[in-house]
Image (cartoon, rainbow, N blue to C red):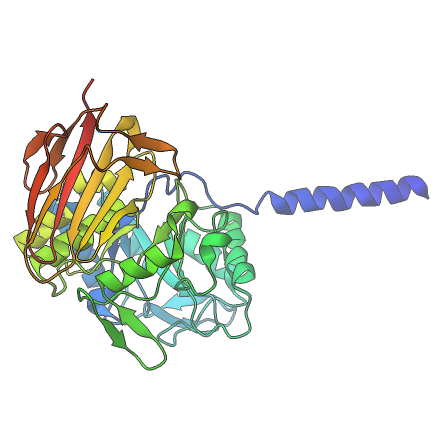
Length: 407
């Protein structure tokens, strides 16, 4: 009897270990923040396979793929109904060839395909969510060849977010296909405190809106402009939670969607410095050359993709002037000087006076004893830290420098 009890206990333990083997996300998919494109900011629910194919073509033709962009992500509204067995179907009018054929096309371009679902009964646009169908949906996505899942948080009353997002993580793992998992519950439940082992990124704020410093109300909630998101992020002190494989997501970019060129440049530079996933949200087929140059600036992209994976800190907060600094690999640093204001900002930066210390990484600079060469990543100028930096920053614009130690 005792031996039988021991065998039963051992069976339970082995079963638990087997279950735990699935209780992990796919490793190696987001060692640096994801880069790609998403349909929502420009197209809302107006998605179909022809447009997605066009967008994949444009990502290659415009040089975005060469700059590092990988994912073509379909947001809400691709769904049809569930069949008699509960399997999710595509909207056959919008995706007549099926999602597998679309994934094959995107893959033929050297890109990856992303899809959208929701932890609730319905998506934010009212289509079938994944609640109660997590393992079934994950298996379907894997069979279709999906590479990325954005998982939203509408229609989730009385659902525990940790449990809901963990369930889908385990379902994706069980399905067997490596799928990057993007948590999108808008920071409502402080995901930075619990999601590092669940998702590859988590939304840290509400939805973005294509404006510099505004909030656009939708009744019980508001979409936020660039500075509004930036300031929420400051108050939450989020940089300590981010790193390779687990990133703070400040939402998809609005570059090319109606702000000024200076504002787009600032928006893109800030998201790169903050290690947010760089997910474009404009129409790649018709973007201006100015927008294309912003999105494909490989020097700015390199800050976002730096292998050290350290999110930038706000170093100086002085009214219209904000200065962000970001420790990089190989002893380098990035400095971003932001003019939040409506007039040109004249500023002299005394390197020797402004010592640098980052408590998160333990790295510091005393410019009285160390000299760095700097390069302007937008304008191409060069200099070093033995001389004061004289800046005239246009309204809503940035200067971004990469500092390399002189040995």
